[in-house]
Length: 339
Image (cartoon, rainbow, N blue to C red):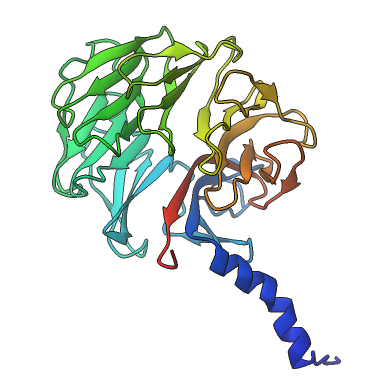
């Protein structure tokens, strides 16, 4: 065995890129990922699924429990050690950064698809689940169903988001359309009628009046009045599922859509035109989710059970970014303490 000693100057130089990366990033990236390619029940293959945090060197660290069914995560803005996940067995909460967890929902609220902490009142948490919408006003200790205005049939809820600029305003994507509440989910009214489930609803980081949504097979939509009315994106195909939509926080004209059928669809003119951005990605282009880094504008794309890919030119070229064998259910960019 031989030992090689690296001169101090060379050693410091080798770490400078990592230091620069860590200092430049003002957001931490968390992903909810099922890392289970080639895994079957009873298999001896060991996988680590659930919540992952991107490190300063670009590597990934697993956070909390090993659970492939975590679909979404939402953090308490007052204390980032407190966060909630939507998972197969209910809404889970940790108050110590993931060291320990508690299932907060009961038998009648299971398999939630999305969770959202209210930025105006972080003690309040909203939950989207197959039976509708549930709300906790005490940090997940108790839950109440709030479904007034939702249909008896068709209230399956896939996604829920709180309007960051209007207290009490929430948008929910259900199997029968988009519903808006203006009173902390005490009542709902339909603002978009669809015959297919709404898979994702997002608010523009540039203009709080602008929202975008995608559906299972009814196309994509934009609202310019806080979700009160919607218009279809004409050039977005509607024959197959669109899984999610993401705004570019660094460029108001840029949006991206992820689709298992169409791959990555990108717009650089506010949604007026759309183009596939799949050149350089492995075929078939089975995109599970897309996201955009608010620090750099880097476009991220999860290829189903393949890996995470990133693009610095909004999809014109791609390179692998880790998480081999994964399917990412959501990207969450959290302001860090270095900001």
